Length: 289
Length: 311
Image (tube, rainbow over all chains, first blue to last red; front, top):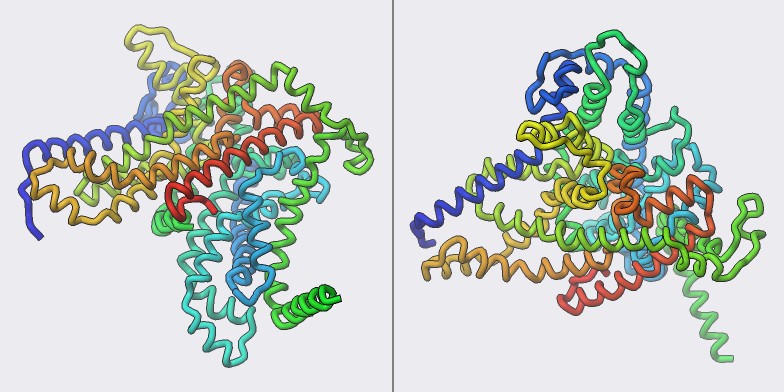
């Protein structure tokens, strides 16, 4: 391969793109930095607009206050449960459905696939959806966080495509030894589909963790609020602790809200390195369908 | 007579198939049940758009009223307002939000320093994983009276503004937050398309003395275009599918005139106020327009490039 010397113009251009992208990334981080700094600051400088990206009157009082909120932890644990159980259920049902659809000997495959694709084209109106699910008893039920998301047509098709692309020899050998379809799926196919399971698992998990509209429609009981609804409640109904108090407190609404926001981002940031390993592959899987 | 035997044979074929592959039928059952219960039964529920639905009478016993709700829709100012807002915001998404990942991907492609590139990409991808509740809370804080933007405004002698309550800024805020959350994520697929370009083309260009900028515009961009066009067509097909989470979390009653869209309106008037039939009519109207757009633009994408469509 021939080497070409970089011209002055090219070097300039390269550094320019690096600077532009770097500045844009700082711009993207600014709102995070502001909120992070606010969560460690005293109330007076915050109200006076003196806190930018570095805490002023550094203290941990807002964090102590927020971390002592039992309802917040309650919502947090509820969301963890829904995400873990939901992701497991989603992957199981999706795999169970995708496997027969990838088999040519399965006569219903074409009809079912058509039925699935139709749901991608025609979006059901929200009110009949709401009324149907309510009639199933999902209103104010913790299961509404999980069950309505069981299968995404998109993920199903990705998994089916992946199963179809697997070499037949693997299964044939096991089939000779009298292994049934369930055995094939759970002992042969799924163990060699770890990458696609991880990717789709991330899609399902992030979807369940971040879901907002479904709980907003279906959950009235505050004891069943998932994290996102609890978060919105804390952020919208601003008077968390300071209403009517004339005493000087080491925190105020803004610092408490900021702390709550950061609190909610931490779990995502903690699993992010794991996500990053898989999501790039995943985003591409979707594009080649 | 012959038809009967043929049908019978086929029927036996089915029975035999079910017997032989019982396990496959069993496996597919939970999934099919899910699609019936959560996709097809709700679809059947659109009949209430043609009824005066009463909750205690249910779908079966509520009186049919034909197209009454559709007729009253079109004579209703609120409907035109949310339809107009939905269309405008959808259009803004295509004109202002859609091109940003292309621009970013072209720039990312120029960076050679891998550590720097990875760090930047990490920052650009992260917001995709945060919920709209978090993103809009960050936005609200950033634009509040004691927020960064207003502090800067005061500092240079301008008056502080209530951005979130102002009609003039609402759509701009939607555009910027959409870019902030999803533009980085959108580059992944484009960067993959760029990396599949044959490196010999670049080498030939370099041998001819083409600058990097020239290569970007004469090689990378044209070869990226097929991917971009397909993505654009698919995007236009879904132009009415706005993010409820985003708009609901950023909307205030003061910004309803410019930001209230079909989804937020249906939620408020349908689910909260219980006007089920009228809002189902709106939803059905939206779904039908969406259907036409998706089918049309998907077939365009397929015509443009084989395998280009969603299905």
